Length: 250
Image (cartoon, rainbow, N blue to C red; front, side, top):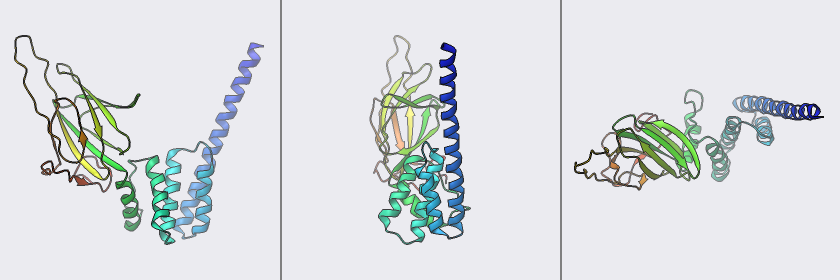
């Protein structure tokens, strides 16, 4: 009896796996057909195929991203309203905030329209540190989002507030909440405080808030500047044409 139950459970999961694989395959083929029809300027056929991608269950985010992206492209070519175009691009951005478009394939006017929407939703922060190559853990609510070492770039939806846990052997562990700002790229320079031996006086480090990144925490932020000269803490920041490897690099 127990053996039969095991077989039944296996059959159920196998069936689910087969169903998911079929759904992904259908979605991919519809996406390919939709993109092909778009480049042939057969927009009605393209929309029909791309809407099939969206209607499938449990579709990969990358397929959904491209479906919404190309629907946006079609709406641009059909002179739809800005609200319709932006709504489609926004759905794509929310699925994959740091996805960049291929400038060798996509026409400049379509990239420009897409980037306007992304710039209204995504912000970037390039994190450097002294000492270099310290451990940083990104936390959002109760979830660990990433474990990296500096230098590191965060590019994400601005609604996603981060907390950074910064640690390095021989230095005080620090915790810093960060809020990204849409359409801006900032550089954050973190200076950790050494763990002092007994009898030595503790150094006092200052922290400065500058650029467009809203940063709050203990005395670990030594300076916040923009790559290539900074803005003196005016809060203007650098425009965000697309998520960069680091500020100033396209």
